[in-house]
Length: 76
Image 1: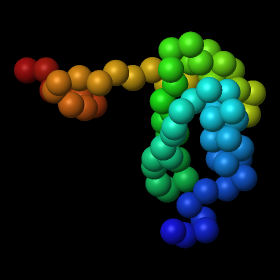
Image 2 (image 1 turned 90 degrees about the vertical axis):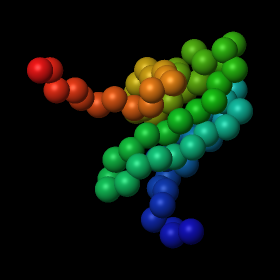
Image 3 (image 1 turned 135 degrees about the horizontal axis):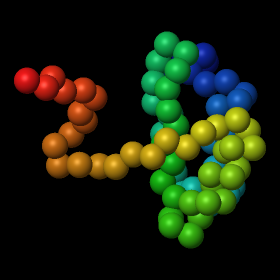
Image 4 (image 1 turned 45 degrees about the horizontal axis):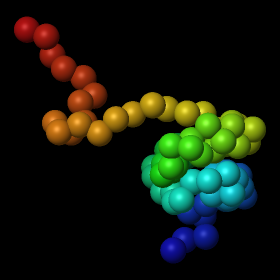
């Protein structure tokens, strides 16, 4: 893997989330932006959120659906 795939801030956010109770995570994105996904047992969710917010991270709610991703639609 390329050395530029991460940086100290990304590494520190990931480590903080794991230390706060996340059981795993995934970094996703390219071009200077993206997301970090964390799997958090329900009892650790708020602790993980607080840890990443202290480092400048933000929460973005999402949900899984049967239809997949919808970003926009055309109304006729």
